[in-house]
Image 1 (cartoon, rainbow over the protein chains, first blue to last red):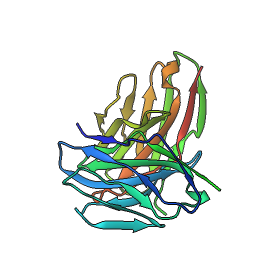
Image 2: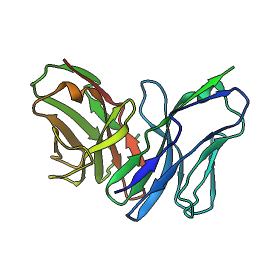
Image 3: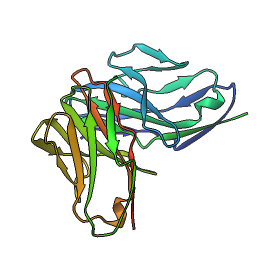
Image 4: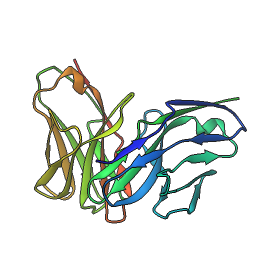
Length: 112
Length: 111
C-alpha cells in the first residue's frame, strides 16, 4: 500500500527564520494528488497545499512545495516563519477512491 | 456553503457499550471517509464509501462498522467500545477532483 514518511516529529524555529518539513512517499497505485495539511489545536485538518504536477512549485500563504517524483518527495518550506505558523503539519497523498494516506505529522513550534 | 457535519462533537462511552458517530455532508460528494487521529499515529483510515449502501474497509477496520444509508450520511459504529478506541474521529468527503472536506471531529473517550 501507500505510505508517507515525515522524518521530523517536532520542529522548533525562531520567528523570522526559514523552516523546512520533509516528506517522502511510496505508492503502488496511481496517485492523483499530494497535499500538505495544517491542523491547529482542536480543529480539523485543512489543506495548505495541493499538487499533482511533477517539478512544479506550488505556493500558498507563504509556504511552498515542489513535487519531485524522481525522488518521491514533497517537502514544505517557508522562508520566514511566523508565530501563527505553530501547528501540526501533515503530508498526505490521495489515490483514486481510497482516500488520503497521511504521514505521522510534524509539529512546528515557532518561538519569538 | 458545502460542509461536513459530525455529531456528536464529543462523547463519553462505557467500555462494552455501543457508540454511533454520525456524519452528514452537503457537498454532493460520492466519497466519504472515517479517520481516527491519535498522537503519534497521525490520521488513519477506518472505513470509506464511494456509493450509498456500500462500504469498504480502510487500514484499521477492526472493531468498527460503517453504514452509508444515503449519499449524504455516513455513520461509524463501535458495537463494543474499548479503551483503545479513545481518539478523535474525523469524517471527510471528496469528489472526483480530490478536494477533501473534513468535519470538525468527534472526541471520543471510552472509560
